[in-house]
Amino acid sequence: MNKKPSVLVTGGAGYIGSHAVLALVDSGWPVAVIDNLSTGFRFAVPEGVTLYEGDIEDADLLARIFTEQGTGAIMHFAGSVVVPESVEDPLKYYHNNTAKSRALIGAAVESSVPHFIFSSTAATYGIPEISPVTEDSPQLPINPYGMSKLMTERMLTDVAYAHPINYCALRYFNVAGADPAARTGQSTAGATHLIKVAVEAALGKRDSVSVFGTDFDTPDGTGVRDYIHVSDLAAAHVLALEALLAEPDRSLTMNCGYGRGFRCLRCSTPSTG
Image 1 (tube, rainbow, N blue to C red):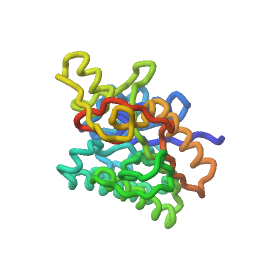
Image 2 (tube, rainbow, N blue to C red; image 1 turned 30 degrees about the vertical axis):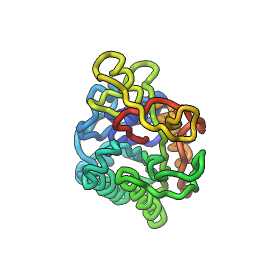
Image 3 (cartoon, helix red, strand yellow; image 1 turned 90 degrees about the vertical axis):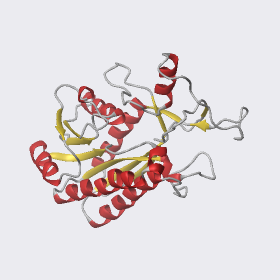
Image 4 (tube, one colour; image 1 turned 180 degrees about the horizontal axis):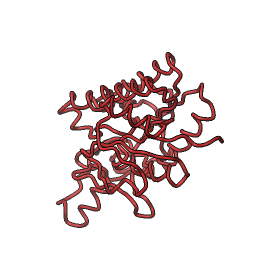
């Protein structure tokens, strides 16, 4: 492969984004981060990686970053991720996840950044009728979170048809775990990810972990979820980037999971990938 281009990671001070930054750095990619630190943390960005504190809606800032860093690819993680909140405040999600993504994509086109990797979600499938879900399954979101991500996928499809840019949309199922070297992890206050909730309950920081579901077609009636370790997910982003560079005329959409489910506790305010 030729010289690796610089990668701008949006939301790179957050949970999944910070793991992607580590995966890129570990693989020798030049990396920069943009994050408004609304839910991310400065300490999650490793030493030697430039952090631009700002918003992906700021076209002037993005243009400056692209010039300073010689950006050749974007990994887009910035956005809001709590499903119940999206139902309570849908406009927040259509702004943060859709309108701001439109601004970021527009800036990428304006500056001729040719590769774009998008953090999407299995929530775009809604309640699928088949299991396991395939990338060709109907996308029928049941909440604003899933719809806000689907709208960004559709924008990328149309933009890649009209401009010299290719993309990969990665649809996550349920993300868990932390960097094995303890360099970063899930630190967001009030996060709804199961393992963080369970650990907080074990430490006495929560009164309990709620279990939902009594009538699923499983031995105990609870739901089955496909969990993927966050470091494996980060590695998938690096592989996706390599694939985009290898075939610049091809775009990709892929599910990210292990293809096997586990019955487990589900926290009272679950989020989806």
